[in-house]
Length: 295
Image 1 (cartoon, rainbow, N blue to C red):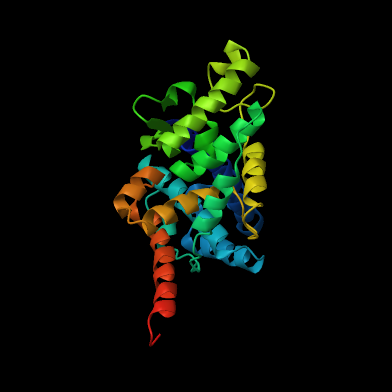
Image 2 (cartoon, rainbow, N blue to C red):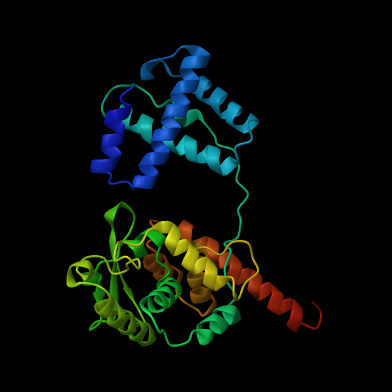
């Protein structure tokens, strides 16, 4: 089936993330398990679009969401494109497949007044943990970076002189993000606590550390953000990604250029960024209804 070769290809040549590779692996294992049990197929050359449609129908019957099914179809598209590229098949059976429609959801974000309230309530940090946790929240809001990007920040990625942060995004694409002066004041405060808390060796590599001096991990970052957002928001979603949505929405609400926001977020195409304009439009609609005498 050339699955191992394909996974090596997306890891070392395409430089997909560990999370994406793990998802692709599970999707392919599930797909080929279905093919063998249902049709006794063991070779990629035997796969027809009819078999793929049958698998998709089963996934929908089992209650998988359209978004999940479309992600699995995307996995198959990448896999069969690879087989076509290396000459193992003559045609791509996924080309005749149409995925289920996904209802677009507006990105969840925190209202500006709530973020202002949260930031003004931050007191001066009295410990390493307080300085780190405040900086984590404010860095997300000030830059819109992803959780994995924040965890991966290195000491040398912070350029205080130029007012820039270098971020390593998806597929190892680097981008530079400018940050405001107040954030660098928080960075100075955090570094001061960090220098007095840990050995020089612990400080040399990753920018954010746990209280034990090790690299931060996803669940800890989530807990920090969830804890602080719970103080000003009652909505269910209070994750680091909500702060990414908040950054983009507030930037556009204040007149930022869509292409500029796209670059700051590290999106590959403008379509991924345009979803945030819907929040801006909804805000304009509400203002219109409140302000126009005939509305």
